[in-house]
Amino acid sequence: MSDGIQWLAEGGRRLTGVLFARGILPEELARRMGADPSCAARPISGAEVWDLDAEVYRPGADGDGVIRVGETGGWSFAIEYGDSTGGDLLTEIAGDGVEVVHFRPMAEHAPALLDYARDGAVLCGFGLAEERWRWGREPDLLLPDLVTAGVLKPDGVTRAAPDGEPREIAYRRTLGAVERRFGLTLPPAVLDGTRLRTYAVRGTPDLDVWKGLG
Image: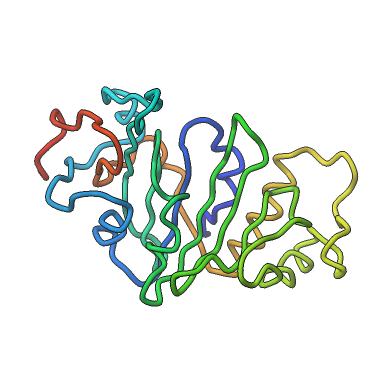
């Protein structure tokens, strides 16, 4: 049974975002996100990311951004930590026919955000549980999927879900619609014990202790 991505509704503060890219390998995804491909750390776990000497916020300067990359279900993916670059570089990552789905939990400043980009443009985006407000070159691109999933009514404005529905359930419903549309899957273990190739994408996080690809 596929893990899907609905469990990301429970991701909370353990990550900054998850970016899926179809059409490029994980190493190229890391490069497009600002990493130096020659400076990968050896594979580390999500728990070990917190052992890095990283500053998420520096007044007047970039904070430290780190990604762990892998591949699943025909998509490359990057799990983002700290001051990462996925939200700033969507159009660059999506160049040359690459498809990108980007999820940001926004635990401190809800709602969570989701964007879909392709061919160098953001085509559709919205806040989860706020899908009536959509943006992008084709803002209604995913509307049929949201209607089928019971998120919105066909007018694209009225919520189909019950009033007062818990946020986690609302998030799961929308993530399920996106999961089915694009065939996305991600094992929950990637947030914790699974070791993945790791790169710095912004700032100066101390990856020296993890250097070497063994």
